[in-house]
Image (cartoon, rainbow, N blue to C red; front, side, top):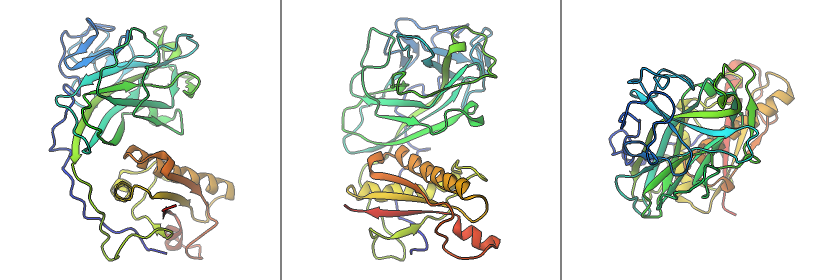
Length: 364
């Protein structure tokens, strides 16, 4: 049993210092200060942003003294994640046979380079006046704009969709970061954001206490979107180096360090990201390897509760690795609850050791 995965020497360009290839990514600029619903003209939403379909996304900005203001507007109440503006899209409408969708599309300031790794990132949140919540939102990176003459599900498959295990909870009304590491094929020039799934695949939840008053929102899941970024983070593969070990081995269990969750919950805390980024780097480099993620709990609580919690925590780790660009087919989650403690005992120190996430790399 390894005591932990040690630090890799990874040279990466700081995303805070790199150039964002998405123009007007935080929707600060506008052609006309919005007064109410969509101010789109000829498909243009705001400088740098268009609708790739006949759907009509909306712009919200603090300049507005009408119903499209920030923080209060017809779709709900929300401060911008950054700056003074954000966009809004209908991602799902219950019971509508045409499966109405809206999408945001921007053209990069320069084409993506083949083999180069980019960080794709934006923040989104469910509007407080939505009557429904859904489990997904995604993006498409493409070399063409895919302009369509319909307002239905987009005709191209998403590059990646974030599919949440829980459709609705108290966090649904907060800004959520969507991050994904993308290795370019070369020549890509566009990003498109929205729900790329049809109604059969989209899981939904009816929010009984929603304050929805606008008729369409009473049947819809409507997302605010802000702070969209595509930033170059690496242009060469890096061999992961383990301090204190001659090499990383397959078929051995590693206890991950600093993987933390909220109490009795499976939500990853930000302190976990650094370690999981290192795991992703191993999988970037060893392209044929797969990984099993195992969740473990201490002995407090029932067998059923701990088994479910451990599986959900392993699943959260898997979800994070997927957002870093790892193919879902290469990752498996399993929950073992309190069945396999590292140490016996019921004191706090022993329980802290037994609460853990383990990984096992496979090459077969």
